[in-house]
Image (cartoon, rainbow, N blue to C red; front, side, top):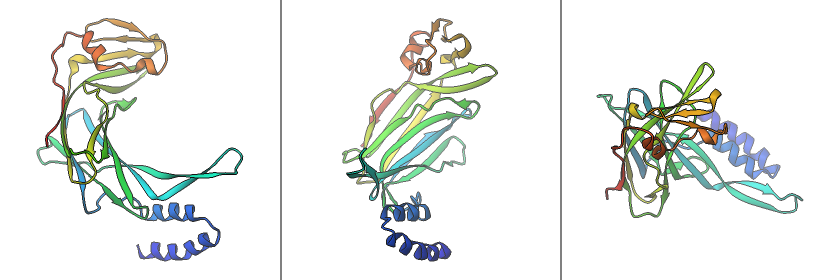
Length: 250
């Protein structure tokens, strides 16, 4: 740390003489980035653990102190936008190996004085390559709510392509992004169940999806057509009952 400070003190005057304030901020941010262990208000995420999945929790931070410049097409005007970056939260698994905890500070600190604006949660497979992430998004605003509880039923969608398999989970929770307070400690309780009986298989070479009840859907070959939503899977399965809810608990 001492050597980093010494090098910074040598390098910064050179950038100042060059009129490169933007590059100073970027340089110092690399040396003093978002601090995921920062003191102060935080959002704590609690999730269940499944043998075949892990939960990714990621915070999006923005800075009004550090900005990026943008020139117009004729290079006659310049505008500025706040820097943003995404940081994955550390997963701490409980002794019973059934639950995990993630801590995301609202004040990310660092040289750029990072502030949390969004949290993303996504269940990922530990067995297959992940084709796409279906994220649940929580925006940090002046909301009156700070605690939320969710339960999602996840339908596995396996994509077969030549000799490879990948997967994503179609979630029963398909609501718009939720909002949490950026002024107080918050809590997110995310519970889920992967339902094997809702497994849908996409055969890429044949451009078709095979639903749980055996029904076949012909796809148009585009990447978008491979994204099968949860309701369509339920309609083409024998499993009509499932658990799903989103509710604030404060």
